[in-house]
Image (cartoon, rainbow, N blue to C red; front, side, top):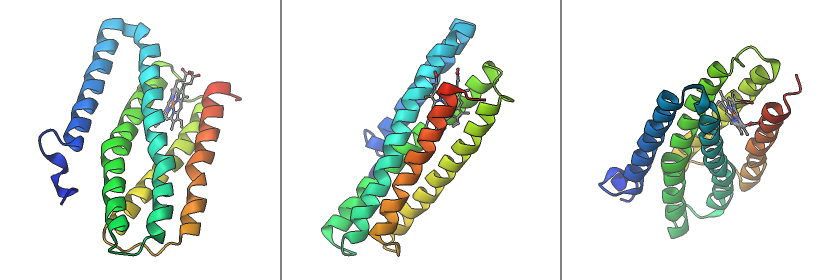
Amino acid sequence: MAIEGDMRKGSPARRAGVALAITVLLTAGAIVFLGRGAYDWVKAVHVMAIIAWMAGMLYLPRLFVYHSEAPKGSPQSETFKVMEHRLMTIIMNPAMVIAWVLGVWLAWQGAWLWSGWFLAKFALVLGLSGVHGSLSASVRRFAEDRNEKSSRYWRIMNEVPALLMAGIVILVVVKPF
Ligand code: HEM
């Protein structure tokens, strides 16, 4: 089955792993060779990881809307399973790990750890990560045809990551307190 074959040589999951390793190596190289000048480069990679993470966080609940309307066992339902699994494992999980690692480095390096805006952002990011965990559990439930939630529920869930993202970006860019 396509999901089981994801770690094959040349498979999308393997390529995502290689991309993750290259990102980590390049970032580590920037930190070692550029010293404090690495801050803006690391921030740029942090924002790239956020874009990839958020793309998945906004798209996956939309897939769930259509998947919950597809009859269980239908060809559409089986296609959604592969799309959801790949989106989660190849894009969202690696992007979240990169965003977290680099975000924590930025906070430590920029001495932001006790700033009000950072603590508030951190709380919202914990919420966003919790939504990620719950979406991940839902990918497994859909894969086993155990989803009981309606498409209306998934339409509402679709707005939660967008609201959290708006709060997070305002906090980190405007730094109101
Ligand atoms: C995963 C945990 C995260 C941590 C620890 C973290 C921490 C940080 C820190 C310390 C900065 C540097 C701030 C500055 O230099 O002014 C930063 C930049 C940024 N972060 Fe995060 N962040 C995280 C996740 C996120 C998320 C989820 C988003 C958006 C949804 C986000 C969006 C941004 C943006 C847009 C910037 C650039 C801000 C600017 O240059 O003005 N971050 N982050």
